[in-house]
Length: 115
Length: 114
Image (tube, rainbow over all chains, first blue to last red):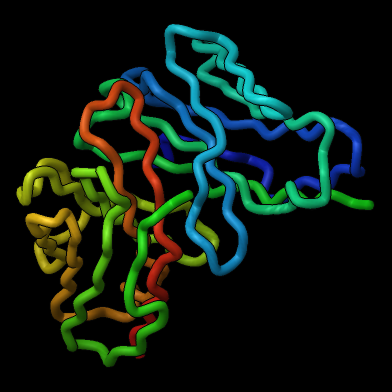
């Protein structure tokens, strides 16, 4: 029973273009969503988050969009840079992210930025 | 910059043995969570500790247990190891109920059970 789904195991994007990573969820109790980035041999690094009371949050080159009715969120990276090549995890939480149920992660999308 | 450190980085154990993994939380954080990441999967929540007590648990059997110490460092203990316990174990620290807290992860411990 996968409550957070990232249906694209990998994505290849040309340097300078927009990268769009998608994530779907099934649990209506989720009210806080996060994106993490992971390089090999390192732990996941927090990237950006969004509360369910918003539909967009922007931080520099990174923007997360949330569509609650569709239970879908996406991460946009503009422009894409070589250092963005990594595995990106979508994660969700109930209780505004501070709850004791932990984070529920998707399986990740491997983003490859082509020169 | 994350200050979460885990030890050891790699470990090989035999089926049936017991293992202890350690985590040092980032300064100022009072909550620690443990996750298991199997190959090709996302991290899966094991449990969370706050004020030295377990206050949340994922779908893991009781042979997975933990401790949190007064300095907020933590241990994950796994008894009666099974082959399927082979995974990357991640520790994450955060500040309890900071309103949308983001967890800071360590680099993980790679456990191989043979």
